[in-house]
Length: 218
Figure 1 (tube, helix red, strand yellow):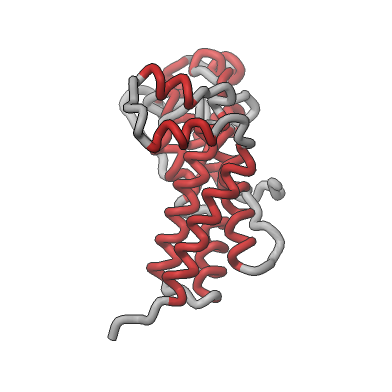
Figure 2: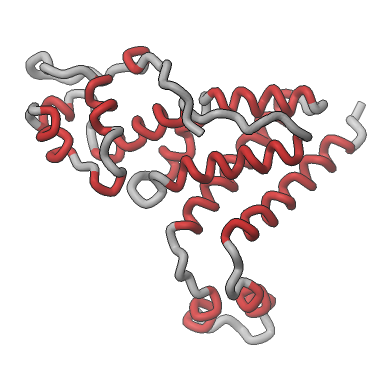
């Protein structure tokens, strides 16, 4: 769902450090880094591909995690909104787009940094407009954006553990037999990731609808 790149990478704030002036630009680094799979990206490999020393990379990025977060932020600028539709359905599709974006980086970078990579992305701007047009206040629309992004980030993490055994974990933790956690773990057996994600989003959407329909306090 990526669109043609139009973002000017040089508009991003540049971190300047001491030492000699680097022989490479921040935008050149990001473009080259974007060609690596996230799990294969390293400062030495990136520096080697660009023919520069490690210091040339560290002039702009203090760590690999910071670099990956910058790549994720740039990639988020290319996410396109789903086709128009009822806001409830549209919001669910946005969550799937965001989950796909987050899942590219969920196993390789700080989750907080990845989660904030979409804060000012055009997709989020479209989400705010759709929610506001549906009758939500801008603050409610912002809250909805945070909720959907959080759900998508959690969904991306779930995709990183396809063989997770909830029942075995409950046993290992010696949870009391009368705890509802046992029932929940049993219900999660063979739970399809997409179906479970859509089910959780339905809870969020139901809450948003209720807040929209609730009378406004005078």
